[in-house]
Image (tube, rainbow, N blue to C red):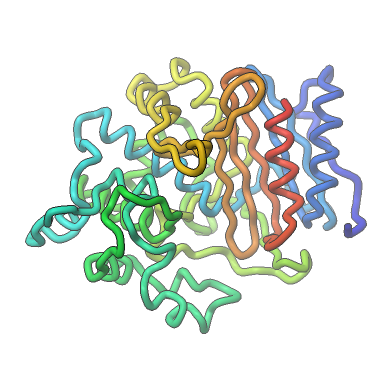
Amino acid sequence: MTAGPAPRVSPSESPPDDGPVLERLAGAVTASDAPQVVFALSRHGRRSVVSGGTAPAPPLDSENLRYEIGSATKTFTGLLLARLIDSGELTGGEPAAALLDGERPAGAHPVTLAHLITHTSGLPALPAGFFLRGLPAWTSNPYARFPPDRVVDAFLRHRPRHRPGTRWRYSNFGVAVLGHALAAATSTPWEDLLTRRILRPLGLDGTTLRADGSGPDAPGHARNGVSPVPAFDAGGFQAAGAVRATPSDLLTFLEAHLDPAGVSPHLAPALRAVRRPVLRRGIGHRHVHTIAWFRHPTGGGPMYFHSGATLGHQAFLGFRADTGTALAAVCTRRFRAHDPFLATAYALLAQE
């Protein structure tokens, strides 16, 4: 483990009598072994935040910076789909190809919006041609070389190997297509759609979909924890991985799932809907999914979680209704094997 400064506790966010919680969070920060780390925990609305890392402290408090959350963006996309279904604007059964190309016949077994969000569309993880096109920027921004029109075109040309709805395969491609289909269905650009329907109602002012200079962004680092990595550009994969947010906003997002009644009445039904299991797979159906979250059992009740990574950041989001606990953990380093950050975050929430 790389030696670095001791974890830094944020007194403004941490109740003074939560010593045991702060000790656990400080241990998690140290175990994560990344340049910048923030563990933000909420229990029954009471927040504790610890930041630190192996790099010198940034000019601004780490918890006030925006972090790239990668695939954890899918939890926002799933909630948006649930919101559009609850409002009656969509059913989830719409063929995605028909929304993206009004002249295209649906076919006998079309890929629907529900297939795309549940990773049962039959689509691969990434579209054909992605690796070849992204190779020149593989260590900087490969997704930026696959813009929205290429994502949509690759989907409309693709022929699934399996009937949609019959097999589970995690797919950034599928959720990216879903974002374009929702934008087409509502005649609203994706960034505006997510902002108007999810970010603004929840008061997530520190959340955006691009590094646009409007707020302080945490710098990303490569696997070695030293080399800087450019800000992530999701290209045509915004719905699958473009969100960047402050730890405070991420906790607010998670707290809304724990207490839907405390947020906008327009969002409450969708927040409840994304906690319902819609898919079970594996031996004994042990792997349970909602339209936004992975769901694992604990001793007291289910734990909902999702992780994500870009080339220079990682994130873990999760919550447990049985303990009223939410955890948002972020770090500025990409791990590839024996990941201490994700293992630490998962264990912390599971044991809370």
